[in-house]
Image (cartoon, rainbow, N blue to C red; front, top):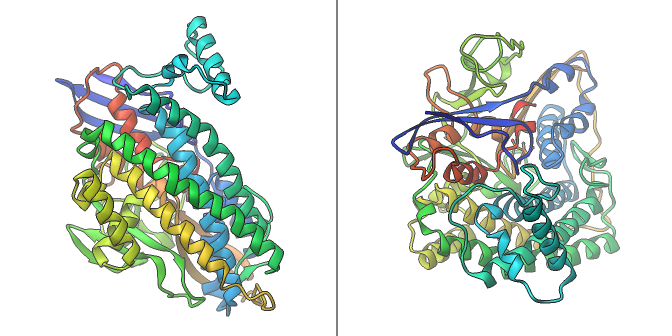
Length: 503
Ligand code: NFE
């Protein structure tokens, strides 16, 4: 039987998934991005310095990543000498955004797949926020509505956490996490100007000053965020892992892993980063080569040629195209399907033995949960990977603030050549993000973004290979084919953002 899982909630953007179930096993899955946007089309002909502003509007969740990728791409064209402060401020803004985003993903978007919200009915304490949740849940259950005003019910049927204290503790953290997200965003806005769309990020650095009062405000906010990661986020992920150990075995994607590396340590274009760059195919790590990335559209709603390299990619919408089921293209690395995101970032770094903190945390949590590092390719592995990334990023950001020079420049002199081209690559929270810019006569001639969820939620490619998320769904056993909580847990573990994916 074919089952349509839409409308898919607790994600960003418009995604639909159709599964085919035989004998309680998903034998086929199709991820469908349901809208066209066309940023790459309307960037053409604009001033190149518009790009890091306009591409931020691709998304309200990961805008800084787009600004940074665009800035890196332009820096490579303009051959800028980025001052250390400029590179550090980019990191401080982008890193704070990762910390916000992992919290949002885990507590608001995913945890309710596991936490039993109805446990709040047993709450007898006086915490005003928890009593508000209790009232909502009570009135939603009483109303019997199928589309509620509050985000908790109705929900898919399945086994949820049974321990009342654990459930109520997680609901409390759901509420607290919103306050902590606010602090992470406030920290990012100190140097970024505002959240979500930064006014200060430019190629070559940042227009904010490195004032001591700004630095100390940033530090105190990030310290609170870091403490929440260590004291609540990581223990909550481990508690869910303990309650649902079978989710180490569910939701593995069946291709390779790609990471571009995150948070450069120096201002050089090829600087080492806190998390390394690489592509992991069949257990072998190789350096990333952007020339090996192509974008297939056999099953995407575009009539432009398929399989083009990033530099050559074009975009002709074709809503009625036969055999096409998504507005998302299918990027492939040398023809391989790869997963991107936190698990890819951690697996690539771990395989390279690059960052000792990655190795230490992966091995510590693997020991505590009884898994091998390869199990990071799973539903629980993606949650644990985000927690590891967050803990490492928070520590790094605090160290990074110490390197700001309060008297030094924060941005390079920008002179835009009449023509040139360049790539800019970074890790958005959801994974590998690549921007390509080509300039002619001082204007953008071509702009191309290859975006994390475009990789993960891609449809079949020209060889009919499924995308990472489709491959993770196929083969999954479902208890109730009409109510596939297993599929939704897999899908949420990827944290898809379809606004980005279709850009
Ligand atoms: Ni709209 Fe994004 C991130 C980017 S996902 S959230 O993270 O780039 O494709």
